Each structure stands twice: as C-alpha cells, then as structure tokens.
Length: 466
Image (cartoon, rainbow, N blue to C red):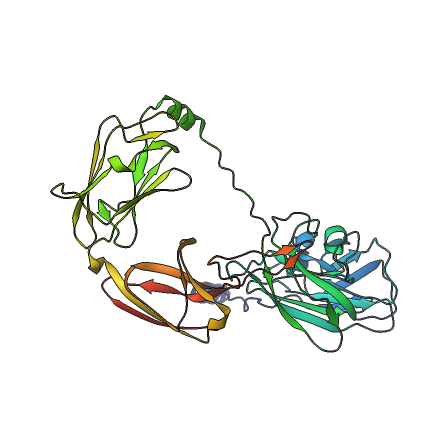
C-alpha cells in the first residue's frame, strides 16, 4: 500500500514539472505569423474567358484566388467603346460579376478597365488597371494611341483631365456626342489607349465630368489640329490644354466689413514697405481701399531725410485708380520722406486724410539681395522665348531671352518657379487658344522642373537644360 502511494506521488510530481516547463516555453517563444500578403488578387477564371471571340455577354463572371471587394466603381471603370448605360458591378467572396444592360455592337472589341476598383479584403492590395477584353467579332482589335497632356499656360500636369476620341472628322461631335473612347491621364500627364479599332478619329481633352462634351468655354480643353489615323503605325502626341475664357472669381464681401466701411470716413490705404524698408528693385506703392476721385500728384512731396526735395522720380496712378506708384532709382540704406497733404487725395466715398501724413522709410541693403547668372542650353531663340519668374504662383517678372545667358546684379532672395513662354506673337504675355470658327492652338509654356533658389549676398549661378 505504501509502495503504490509512493509511485503515484512520483508520477504526479513529474506531471507538475512538465506543466511548468510547457508554460515557461510558451512565455519565452510566442507563436509567429506568416509573411504579410503584398500581392494583389489573381484572376483564376472568367466566363466568358478573357479575350473571347464572337460573344455577346449579358453577364460576365470573374473569379479570383482570394476574397475581393469593389471600391468607387463608377469613377474607376472605363468601358471602351463607351456604352449608354454603365454596367452593374457586384462582388461576393472571390467573385466579381458584371451585368451589361446595353445591346453590344457587332464585330467590335470591348475592354473593361477597372482602374483601382478591385482589391483584396484582408490587406487592401489593389489590382491596378485590371482590364478584361472580349470581341463580338472574329478578331481582337489591338491598335494603340498614347501621349501626354500639359497645361499650356503653366507647362504642368492636371491628372483630372481625360483624352477623348470621336470616330468622326466632324468638329461638332465634341459639342453634341458621347465620345467613342476615353482615357484618363496619370500623375505625370501620360495617357494610353489600347484595343482601338482602325480608322479616323478626332482627339480632344476635357475635364472628367458627366457630359464629356465641350459645353463651357471656361473648361480646360485641348484639341489635335488634324484628324488622327489609327492603323498599324503607332502615334504619340503632346496636347496642350487651355481655357478659352477665364472664369471670373466672385468674392463675397463680409457683412460686418461692409457696415464698417459705410461708417468709416477715413481714407484707407496700405504701403508696400517691409518693416519700414523699401525694396531696391520696385516702386513704392500706396494701395487705397476705394478708387480715388481726385488725386493731385503735384501736392505730394518726396524728400530726403532733411526734407530737401528730390528729383528724377515719377508718381503714377494706375487705371483702377487704387494704386499710386512712386518710381525712383533707389540707392541702398538711404532715408526718405513722403509727405501726403490732407487735401491732396480724395476717394470715391468722399474720404480724405484727417491731417497731413509723413511717411519715413529706409531702403534695403544690397547685401539683402543675391546676384543671378542663368545659362540656358537647348533653347531655340528663334521661337521668341520669354523667361517667366513666379513666386507663390504669382508672376514676378517676364524677361525676353535674346541670348543663352541672363545676368542680374541684384535679385531678391527666395525660391522661384521658372517657366519658358514661347511667345509666337511677341506681345510678352501668354495667349490662349480657341476652338470655334477660328481654330488656334494656345502658346506653349515649358515648365523648368527645378526651382531657382536665390541666396542673399551670394553669386547664384545655375545651368538650365531644356
């Protein structure tokens, strides 16, 4: 009896030791999962099969190797050629179904590009630009057309635009008809059509809106000057989008500001000084809140710090009658006085100065500026290039280029965007295009991708290759 009890105790002790060891091992080595799935869904079968011939499907079934879901199908799916009614797309588990409501044309190749619509459920991996193709005839059309779209005025890309093809040479199609084909533009401005049928097409660029027609002259728009012949020879184009007319911006006035302005009888203006210092490269400007009714420039006094009248300056009122400019050959670190007599200026609200204003200011140092030397290569001076300098999307200066080098002793420090305008009519500004009785392509602007960074008190030399 004692021997049996002792044996049971030994067995129980061994069992406890095994439990402790198992628990200890579990704490030290946690279970690990497999590698993260980074692959998009894979198409296993399609009914009808992909690239099937002589089929007129009303229902298409796509089966994948994992559970899938559909996102933003209306903005992603492109059916080519276009059909009147968009297909009904649904998904369940590993299957995507497409119900086609329209009657299909005979002897026609159809493609369904899903864009970024299909992705797996677990990791959200997108099956990018998945395209399913079938033909109602004996062959699959495989002609292509590609190119790039740039904004003519800026030289930049707008990826919200579409390229549309009409299978007619009539200019009225873009105003009235649904396009035969259309393709989206990617972030770098490129577009591509595949599985096109041969023939003559007219080519246009439009915003990706519901109508896909040129029904508003303020829309961004581009057109190919000649019809496009689609055949075995591949064609690539660059199209330049423009607005025939600019949409006028409307700014709503603040009700409280309007009431305050009605009750305010003071002449309101601002002055273009930077912490009391005047830029060496631009005029001194007074900007008035309301247009001026009367302005007597002969009464305004421009003097040195000892109130000695200066010469060689001009005072101008702009056409809006809101900006007064004082032009003078500024020298660095010089003190000035601008005296505005109280009865010299009156705005359209009947407001004048309460008393004579004396403005004291000093010009900046030359060390606040940098010098620039820009060297241009591969630029065609016969196309009348104009260097456009922008800062914060505002045109700072336009400089006609007559040589391959531009030198400025003084230039404001900062970061600038550079563009080259090819000024066909040599009027110094960009001219838009038109698509009416008179068809005219816009003037072209080439964007220089690398910004110009100007350091103060520094010789800034830059080589610009075009």
